[in-house]
Each structure stands twice: as structure tokens, then as C-alpha cells.
Image (cartoon, rainbow, N blue to C red; front, side):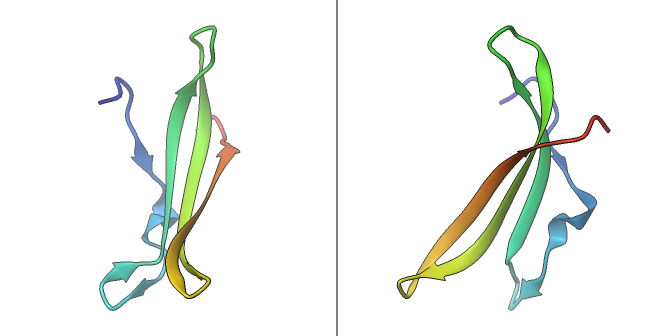
Length: 65
């Protein structure tokens, strides 16, 4: 378990269809090799690839809030 909080963004609910959340977004702090922390946003969405369920995700630099 990380020693720092994982925060769910206010928009994390995404769109809900039949009880399944199709999109999630989290704000976390990642650690540089020198030990300093920096904000990161993790976003994932449900999709279909070649007819099969898949997850598309991205990591982007976050803000300092």
C-alpha cells in the first residue's frame, strides 16, 4: 500500500451503464528517482478491441492541487 493518498477526481464517476463505470480518473503522486514526489493523473476507459473488451489508459502530468 502506498504511503501517500490516492485521490479520486471529482469527474471519476464517468458515465455509468448497467452498473458498470466506463471511465475512471485518479490523481496520485509518483516518485522521481531522487525521491521527490510529483502529481500524475491516471485515466482509464472501457473499450472494445477486435470485438473483445479492453481498457485504454493514460498517465499525464497533473496539477499541484
